[in-house]
Length: 210
Image (cartoon, rainbow, N blue to C red):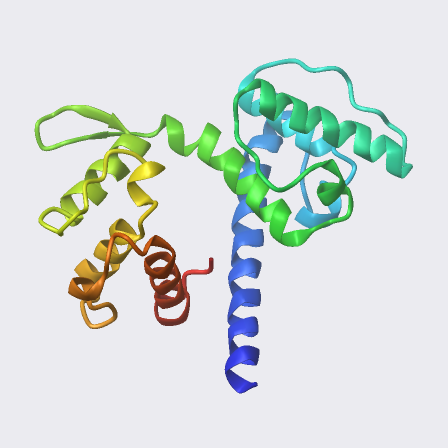
């Protein structure tokens, strides 16, 4: 019980930090149109600030949001948010307009993180040792390739299929904390077991939530 309580407290602290950080990021962009978020979970519920944030970030003009305060007005506005995300080919899984209206804290944090990835990190570029410019995504892929070089049956080519058997995750953990995973015992034909082990170790030993 003590361990579970401690874990819950730690998770709550992480979410507080994320909320504060994401609020600052949103406000840095909303300030351009003289708008501001005070409470991330409450202020985004009606969809109007989310729509304005996407307008500021993308430079696109969308239909004016509904000014009504009833639930169906809020759902209508948030449906426009998700419609834009689909139009921009931004993947948002396992959440919808009702989650924002209902103030689902974890999913709201996930949505803002997705938006940050699309509009902020994707545009960051890095120069490699060979003076070659790479996007943040390309640089991260290169970093994982270098960190897992030499590991048996690990060949990272992308952020999807290359991770399915759990060996890439396990190799990254082993590279930095070889005491946490015995990589030589892993079997690529047992992907579920490998993934479960890697995620359990990451969550319990490294403080990385699933």
